[in-house]
Image (tube, rainbow, N blue to C red; front, side):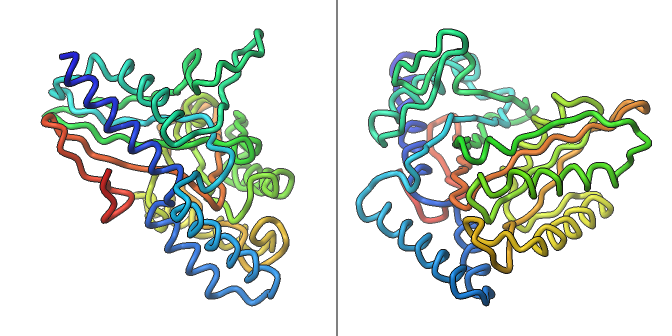
Length: 297
């Protein structure tokens, strides 16, 4: 078991280090699309600098942004995966190892003590959220580097049900106007709608992990995503907040049934350098990187 655990730690550590340097396929493709349809000269120059940044990150083998964030993991774990009980320890040690081999900036500060021990590991760090899936013996592991800039706009509120979905739309637009520029646009906007603020917040993080361009399975949810995306782009924030045709890469909504007396909304955003990743690991440690096709570890 010790040998298997060490192998899993090493695999996940290398995966984390890779995601710090190479953007996922859907983000790269969306940035190309936004660059090609941009008409503002300054905005086009900003997109050019973004792609130059990515080329140098790959060439120099270093993170594409100096803020490598606090690592979050979201897991769809097969109930029959043989190392399920060891995963918390494995993920923690993988972050510790990735901090050295990537390297990652030291970003975990202990609450109250205000100390940073330089490992990116601490109380509930990395943050881990689980979904257990029956009749599977593999894990689908999503990683996300939650940087300071893209965490600043994070918001959650519980509204009276009379506020309706219009109240959610207003809350999203207020966030974007007041705080969106801090998160290095164009942004991916993740929205959770539920009955309490805590559930909505977690769902908004799950929303950030969906492939850009995917739609909510409910037709009304899909239409809301589309209309929000169109409306937010009309604000004209543009890349890095310097004006332009697009403010967002997309809007994703995840939902949970709510109490009849409440409607809650949570918002989280991913910056243009949206460092998410998805890897499927089988019980024999063979793997498939879903988010970065053609990349091996």
